[in-house]
Amino acid sequence: MSESKRAINLNAGPGALPLEVLQQAQAELLDFKGTGMSVMEMSHRSKEYDEVIQSAESDLRELVGIPSNYKIMFLQGGATLQFTMMPMNLLPASLSADYIVNGTWGKAAVKEAKKIRNVRVAGTTEADGFKSFPKNLELDPQAAYLHFTSNETIHGVEVFDEPTPPAGVPLFCDMSSDFISHPIDMTKYALIYAGAQKNAGPSGVTVVIVRDDMLERVPGNLPVMLDYKVQAQNGSMYNTPPCFSIYMVGLVFKWAKKIGGLSAIEKTNRAKAELLYKAIDESGGFYSGHAVPEFRSLMNVTFRLPNEELEELCAKEAKKNNIIGLKGHRSVGGMRASLYNAVTLEGVSELVKFLKEFQRVNG
Image 1 (cartoon, rainbow, N blue to C red):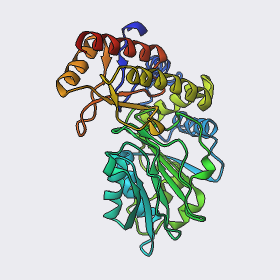
Image 2: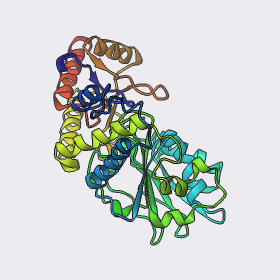
Image 3: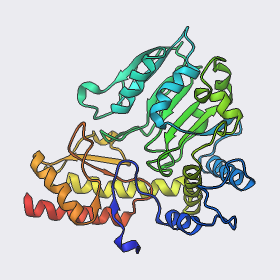
C-alpha cells in the first residue's frame, strides 16, 4: 500500500505508528536478520533476541537520557496493571501516597491503589470537568510518593511542568500518552510507566523506568509476576516477554533517534497541535475546545460541536475522507484528534481542511 492510501490515523490508542517502522517490520517479518525466522517465532533466550531487547533498552536510555541508576523494564498488563503494581511494590503499609487527579486515568489509578494501600487525593480538577491541572495541592511531606498523570487522553489535558513534591518524596508518573513526545529530566522522577500503544509501539508491552533505590522497598512476599525486583533482576524475562511488541518499540526508539530525538519531535508535535487549535479557536464557536489553553494537550485535542448530531455526522464524514478515529471517548463524547508522534503535519493539515469544509457546509 502506498503512503498516500494510508489513513490519517487519529486513534487514541493503539495509535499511529511510523510508516518507516512498519515497513522495516514488514521486510523482516519472515526472516529476521538471516535467521530464517520471524521475531515472533524465535526463542526469547536466543542470542538474536537478546540483542533485540538489549538494543531497545540502550536506545531508550539514550533517547530519554536515563541515568545508569535506573532500571528499564518491558512488562505486560498495560498502565492499568501499574495502578496496582506501584502501591503493591512501593507503598509500605505504614505510609500513605499522594495522587493528583486531572482526568479519568488519574482517578482510575487512585481507585486501584485504594484496594492495596492508603492513598489520598492531593488535588483534583473533577469539579471543573477535568479541564485543567490542579494548582492548589495539599501535599503530605511524609508521603511514600507523589503520583500524577502527565497527559489525560480522554479530556485532553497535559501538564508540561511536573509538580514538585516535598523534599524527600519520590515523584511517580503515568506517562502513557505523552511518553517520548518531548524531552524530560529523568532525574526528577523515581518511577515512570507508559503503555506503549500511544507513541512507543503496538499494544502488549508497558515500559517501566524505576530508580534503583525504589527497588529496596519491594516486599519479599509478592506474586512473582507482580514483583518489580524480580522483573528487574531478570531483565524483563522472568517468563516469556511480549517479544514482537518489544521488537517494535525498539524500532520506534531507533526511528525517534534518527529524526532528531525528543527536541525535534516536540517541535513537530507543537506545530501540529497549534495548527489544529488555531482552527478550533477561529471557528467562531462552531468548534469549542475542552481544556483550558494553559493545559491543552499536544497529544489529544478534544473539542465539541454545537450538538451531538453534528458530532456524529462529522466523525462519519471524516471517515469518508480517510480520517479515522476522530470520535471522542465513549465516556465523554465529543471529538478527539490524537496527534501522536507518528501523525504527520501533512495529516493534520488535511484534518484542518476537512474541519473548515465541514463547518462551511454545516455551520
